[in-house]
Amino acid sequence: MRTALVTGGSRGIGKAICKKLAAEGCHVIINYKSNTEEAQNTLNEVIAAGGTGELLPFNCGDKNDIETTLSRWQTENPDRFIEILVNNAGIRRDNVMVMMSDEEWYEVINIHLNGFFHVTRAVSKNMVSKRRGRIVNVVSLSGVQGMQGQTNYSAAKAGVIGATKALAREVGRRNITVNAVAPGFIKTDMTEDIDESQYKAVIPAGRFGTPEEVAAAVCFLTSAEASYITGEVIQVNGGLYT
Ligand code: NAP
Image (cartoon, rainbow, N blue to C red; front, side, top):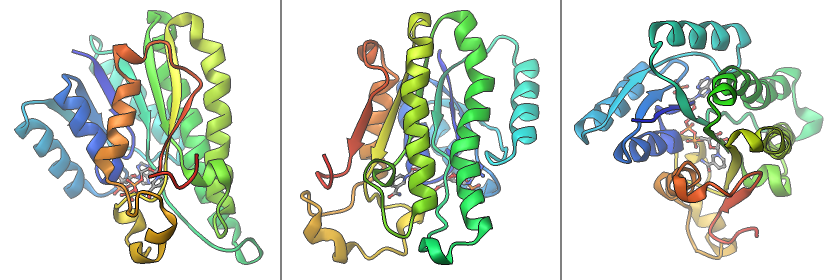
C-alpha cells in the first residue's frame, strides 16, 4: 500500500484527490489547517469507500509547524514512507496591486511557494534515498497566463511551476517525477464568490470544472502509467487557455 500526503486535503480539490487516491489503494494522509470538521468528513468518506487514511493538521505557511509535524509523524510511523506528495493547500487574497497590502502579498506567497518548499524538502529526502516518488503540485491558470487582481497568487503559482521544472531535473535519475496540474475555474469554496454565468461564454467547455476532473489528472500523474512524464504542467481548464 502506497502512502500519499495531500496538503489542503480536507475540502475542494484536495478532498477529491484524497478520495481518488484512497480508491486506488493508497493510505492517505489528509493535511489541513484549521477546519477539523471538514477534514474528519473527508476521512469518513475515505473509510466508508473502503480506504484508509489519517488526519495530519499543520499550517503550510509555517516552516516550524511543517517540519516538526512531519518529523514527528515519521518517528511515530517508522514503517511508512510517503511515496506520493500532492502540494495542494492554497488561499486567495485578491486585490489590484496598487491597493495590495503587505499581508495579502506575503500570506499568499508564503502558503503557496514557501509551503511548497518546506513540505517538499522534508518529504523528498526519503524519496531520494528510497529512489522512488511522485510529486504533484496543484498550481493554477493564474500562474500560467497571469490574472488581474491576483499578482500575489499568479507570482506564487508561477514560482511553483518554475520549481516543478527545476526539481524534476534534479531528481529524475532517482526515479522521482515532479509535475504540476493547473486548474482553471473549479467549483469549490475558493470560487464561491465568482459568478459562473459571467464566465460561461469565455470558457470553451461552457462551465466551471469539478474537483473530480482535477483529481483525475493529479492521480494519473501519480500512477505507474505516468512514469516517463516529468517537469510537465497539465492544464485542466475546459479549454480556457491552452
Ligand atoms: P478550497 O476549497 O478553499 O480548500 C482549500 C484547502 O486548503 C482546505 O483543505 C484548507 O484547509 C487548506 N488550507 C488552506 N490554507 C492552508 C494552510 N495554511 N495550511 C494547510 N492547509 C491549508 O480550495 P480549492 O479550490 O480546493 O483549491 C485547492 C488548490 O487548487 C489551491 O492550491 C488553489 O490555489 C488551486 N486552484 C483552485 C482553483 C479553483 O478554481 N478552485 C483554480 C486553480 C487553482 P482548512 O479548511 O483547514 O483551512
